[in-house]
Image (cartoon, rainbow, N blue to C red):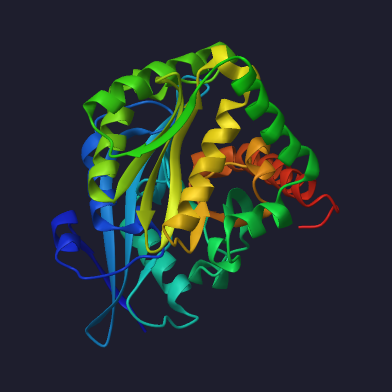
Length: 360
């Protein structure tokens, strides 16, 4: 039998541990809360409060669960209280219970029972879980997200990888656009640099052109930019710039963690779309990952179709939910179940389209 108690973020700082994901690390969690605690909207939530739960077995620390309680507003007036992993609301690269020992099958049930007794809420939503999460002992895990990746250490060289994975048409697209670049007298240059203020000026300029395609401009949000900059400080990070005649036309940022290179942010100047600068930028990251001896390169959360020009592999992430027997919970439950079912069906459809065989 386990026993539980609340600890603070400062207590978590003193615990020596290694989580399954970079977004499980203390510095990530701490920076996320310090940046977004006071940011209030219906995505990040309102009135956020940290609830860090420590689990003990025979007086030994067995697990830690970093949670945040918040509320969101529905139909303009209805406030629903949620309990979630801290950081899953934006930028997560994976979440799970932090384990310090093997957990018994009863752990999840005892944890949730204690949480329901000690925290007031309507719904629990745990998102971006691995399939191996101990929470699968209690809940059915629903398909929620995916992160395409390349297993670099599976291949002896970039050439072997590209021959095995890149479709013939995609290899021709790379060659065709490269010929077009040279034909129109552009000198193409690819460079890898540390992220500094000069580089950020170029990153912001290129990222701004995303708005032409109806996409959001991350660097127009002060808190999101601040969190990204903190992330680049915590982990070894770099930016690749693709330049035409010394002018930056595409970029991609990444962090390194536990032998994995993880793509964080990328964009290309829409004025140069016809030259395929975006795909040349990503292809350069893959080539460089082989040179640097990385085990794996992840393209980050999101099943965007362009990512699967570079790979046919994807890490799958899941979610689960629970609720308290309160009036608002019971009234809102049919709506949330409808949304969850619809969301899972879309993720499964995306995964089936990727595999091309109707199976996941």
